[in-house]
Image 1 (cartoon, protein in one colour):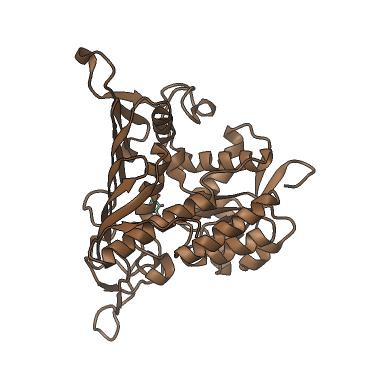
Image 2 (cartoon, protein in one colour):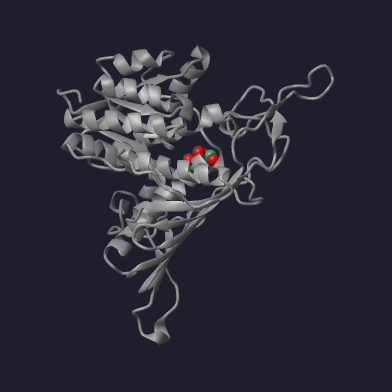
Length: 402
Ligand code: SOE
């Protein structure tokens, strides 16, 4: 932190979808929350000079560079925000921690357990020297999700018996959708499993306070070859033009399109998980239901300002799911926003994430989810992959400490 004015000078690597979401949050966070330090959007990094210059201007960064090594090693950078595809998370985050920078890294933490272990170990060492790190599981910071966790922690649901989680999208249903980086194992690590399954693994473990101990899984790649991408490689990519009049060249899809698994949690709950990019009509549908001995709670990202709560301790005649509108000043994160009843959206979860990270850095607290928490999610992803490879056989999640 710059000692003169409590500024945290942020350097962000990557400027696509997540880079834009993070930029929005860095820009907003100190305007909304009264925090002990101010984030300054100092430097953005991307490989293409023209594109990163345009992104710096559009997203509001002071300067740009095309060399992430320059960014992580500069004396005038305090925080490194990693928003690149998974294949570069480990290298950038490890270099940033070694240079003494606080690190925020997008999810999933890494592409492999080995990388995630190295990152968690480096983060633990750096932490002893006052360097903070956090993984970007932003949905924890949707106020209704945070409230769900509080209800569970306060015992309002009693003993948790069931966890039911699904994260459904449909952006690759069309077999002509191109082979973008998210469909390549060497770039993304896995498919729907790591990209969106990781969110519901983290979210359910966070809300219940229980960890997944073992899984039985199936995964599927419905479309095994796709046209090679043209100009853009994001969620809205286009296909390369025809090659020799034969139509576009094809490439192999090397990740799962969908992953479905059952799991046991260490507090005794049974859980089901579904992550798919082939749920036609479902654009970004994340739903979690938790059933306990005293009640149930339901969160639906498409109605993110609400929580459904069933309180089995109420008189029988008054029972039924009630809808709580999570927009009051005494709901998590909400007091700094608008007057009661005024709803918020997707991007606010990123602002809340930056709020918590800045506060942790400035007060010397350990932010969550830590790299160790994210390693544990990675171990679950790994167990799901191994179970699916073994024809769904029951597979224990490896311990984080070996
Ligand atoms: C794409 O599937 C994606 O952008 C994920 O990578 C994000 O983590 C999720 O928030 C929305 O969908």
